[in-house]
Amino acid sequence: LDQAWSMFMEALEPLRADGKLGAILLQYPRWVRPSRDGARLIEDARRRLGNRLAAVEFRHRDWLADGTRDRTLALLQRNGFAYVCVDEPQGLDSSVPPVAAVTTPAIAIVRFHGRRAEFWEGKVATVSERFRYLYDIGQLREWLPRIAELAERAEEIHLVFNNCYANYGTTNAVQMGALLRGEAVRP
Image (cartoon, rainbow, N blue to C red; front, side, top):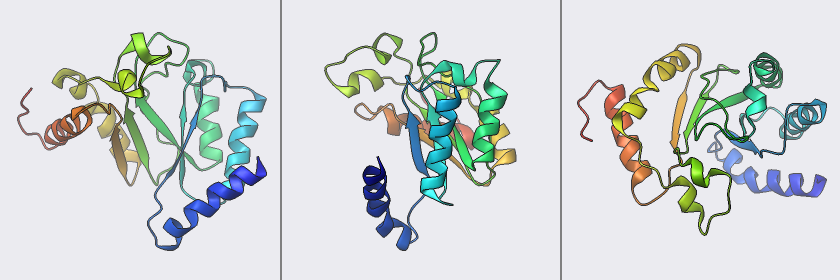
């Protein structure tokens, strides 16, 4: 584990040295759940990353459940990690609710994964099957109030369209940009 972290940090060094390293994304799989062990993983990541800007995305719904949400966000805040807000299929163990939260003022991140529930947790022939989802304008509009809330509390907001099939991600990014500017958007 130490060697893997060392190699990872070494690989990032050229980006850091050139001032091109943004936030490091730490995505915890669905088998990492809110617990003392889960918290220790996050605290260990902070220790290993030093003061580098990093963001955490969870893949188990219990992290943001009503009984654990405040503790989860406080854990990220104490460790200086940005919480990654997500739009993804709901109703599964790996479904994190679309909560807009800022845990560090430096950055807020929203990842749009699509909503293909039937492929989210199961085996797929290609990863693109899971993310082959084109948002409609109404679904993008749902995020406008949340994005406005994030903008009030974070210096930067990054919207990442991970619905990476054909031109779906870029199409939705262009549409979201137009919505944010108050322009008319073509379906």
